[in-house]
Image 1 (cartoon, protein in one colour):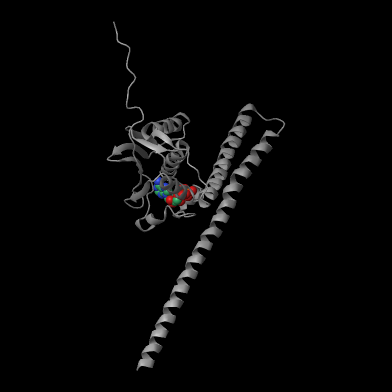
Image 2 (spheres, rainbow, N blue to C red):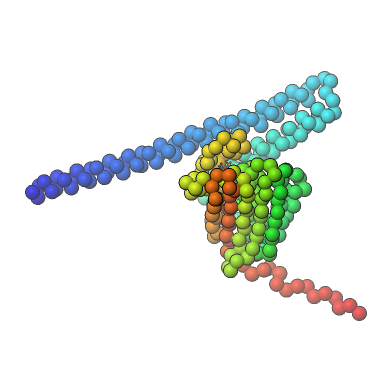
Length: 270
Ligand code: ADP
């Protein structure tokens, strides 16, 4: 019976090893599949702006071109090159983040002020489109890299705009809660299904739906956002009541004391 027991144990061990190996192989296959999809998507994302630019260039070369058409062609070139630059920036950031080469240039900054400036740009340039963009911004100081924090804010706001149909509402708030500076970006857009919520920060992950694909994107924005937040010692979370019920992204960063606690004294009036 001892020999039989040993035999059974060996079989159990082999079975466990095979299961483990199969799981590992599946994980590798999933990762490789995600990478293949990413490359295909990257191809599309680069080709679309390039063909638009090429068409605009052909228009500009027409002999009887009107000023109106020339201006429209210029608009296309400007928008599409902006799109291409954003893709290239994301790719470079991604490779830096993956190889651990992101260096933060930190200084005390007021998150509320930074978000205010960021939203003002959206409003002034009409990028909020048909959406209503509301804000409630309290002072909340953090020790952060302004460029990186701005990247976090704009990624979240841009996603909210992208995944919310026109006419939707995007609410942005900054508050100091205890020893944390808390940024919330809430939309009433397409929302995220509960089972897909844990995946939204995964690299190359697009929680696929017809609307997502029509919106383009590479599925790297949120993984970069999470990386930047974590490099600052913070955390990011997402919640959604489900499809069609909007999404809420919450960023928590360690708060610091305000940099300007001493107000400059006003000259006394006589
Ligand atoms: P993408 O380039 O696809 O926008 P992200 O990394 O920014 O990539 O987002 C990953 C996925 O998370 C998106 O493809 C989308 O499915 C989902 N997502 C992100 N933000 C929102 C949002 N505000 N509302 C609904 N879905 C969102």
